[in-house]
Length: 313
Image (tube, rainbow, N blue to C red; front, side):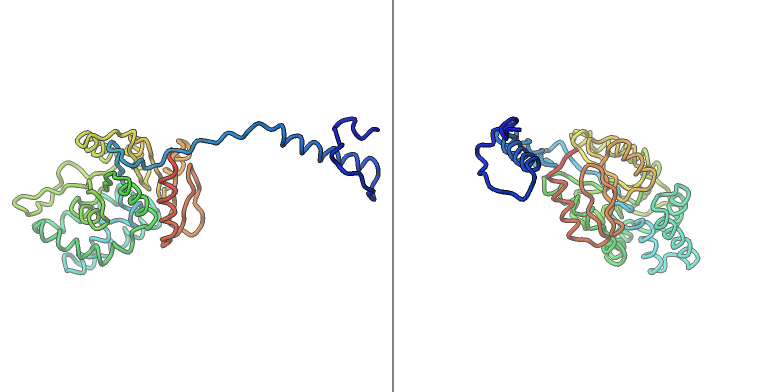
């Protein structure tokens, strides 16, 4: 068979090869085809870069972060109760109940409504008759003693990315608003939405204003704050670990499941929401952007911030 029957092989220098004529022909034809394909290939079009997220200077955007097991390991109320016990606000039997509830929360990784209600009622009875200013001062000490070291570096980096973009960042939690405000301030965030305990003359009455900021109440709080601040919720982001916060996550254009419980993980996958897990050294399941792992991985947290800034849903 003539060597040029299929391809023009004139550019290949002839030399003796320890191979059959058919294998030589096959090799030369493959080389010619490869060369021809590169010459005839259409120019590669550059994919336009994705807009950065968070969007710098977008004054209609903000970020809303759940607190317990999203920003902080465990529940703020449990840590607060531990600090109050140290200061003799209640008895050892009450501490044992707080400890059991904390163990349950850590193992289950989600909020049980009955346990949370029990903690709420305990906390209300403990603070009844105390001055708000006193509890705020003690709360500052408790943050340093029990909470500061439990902040997830990865989630903290995500919040910082929003702050660096010029956006406001709010905690949204069932914890007392005073405790949440302390945590937000210590983390350099804008502020906090939390459960409001009734006080008269600066003294706690042992009652709530309305109900705990939990589940649908969080969504209503975010909606009300967005209206007051002139925010566009489709530009906003929300972060939570719990399926109880699906109403809040569903409000915004950029929902994130952080350290999710099984129900939220399933829902996030079905909806195409982005997911991040900082609880273990393993790589977490990925939706949309790479997961940075590590309970104490500061480098992973920094990577999370960079990835968030470069990708958007």
